Image 1 (cartoon, rainbow, N blue to C red):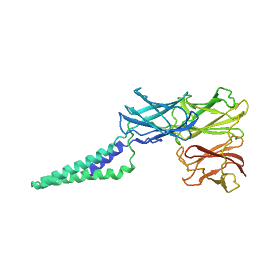
Image 2 (cartoon, helix red, strand yellow):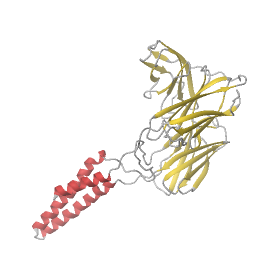
Image 3 (tube, rainbow, N blue to C red):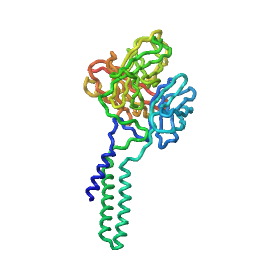
Image 4 (cartoon, helix red, strand yellow):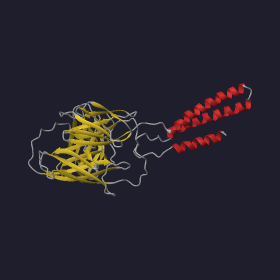
Length: 410
């Protein structure tokens, strides 16, 4: 009898288990999304929700000075259409109310710029086997008491059956407790349906500028349109990786101009960021992103800027990085150390970033600092011999620091 009960419990556990998604969603955790808006690098933090209807707290972390007016924030349920709005300044927070779980969209407005950030309101729910654990313990206690009382009333045979049932129920609960760490967590309320993954979705990107012909010193928009390579539909399933929907690197051909920004989602499949070019010439664009249930991907493009060079403030001087070995060889790892100009604060989930581009622009690499100590340490393997342009980046209290340097690889 006890064996039958144990087998039944294991069958119920296996039936309750569901396949895990490639991108695990954790209820109660915060979502951080970097945005370059109003010329400033910000991170929007959507804090985890524990109940609905209930409060949803949205805070803004600033990595550069922000002199504009307060940001307009709106959270809208894509299922019910209900919305709540407020204002917040960088460094502050606003508390809004949500009435249900599931897909939502956060609208962030700063001047004439608008970002549409998709997210899900998730609320944790108990796993199916928790009922078996607590139910088994309750049943064991009830049967044990019944067995003791029955034995006291001079019915030993019935009492033995009840005690045996109590032992079986306790064994079932104990078995599930032992197996619980290996069992998949139940999907939280509001999570996307788990669907079988076939292949790895691939996006095709088109880079354009608005206006089509940018002029040095004047603001323009870099626009990236993403469509699915198989269906031709707009790509609207970007996963937040390294605290951003996408990382956009824009450099002049000669490397004298460099920007690492985080474009705004302005429509399904469309990312945009506003820039100013310091001088005329050819500019190269690289966009890193990741789709749900897929790996990382990079698309690239280029545009030309006309006009005359504008006068800009001289960049701050920084100590040059130290390379070990000092004369790198293609295909072998190189250690790169950078002495930070201040106390480093995490940016994009990492203490530091290293972006490397070949001189002709045909290669771009992006790695992160290892550990959190000082100096910042990077490891990079240059693919082939030649000259490379590199930029080490990190955040201190009031700004993002960029350290440019070149590397000759034999």
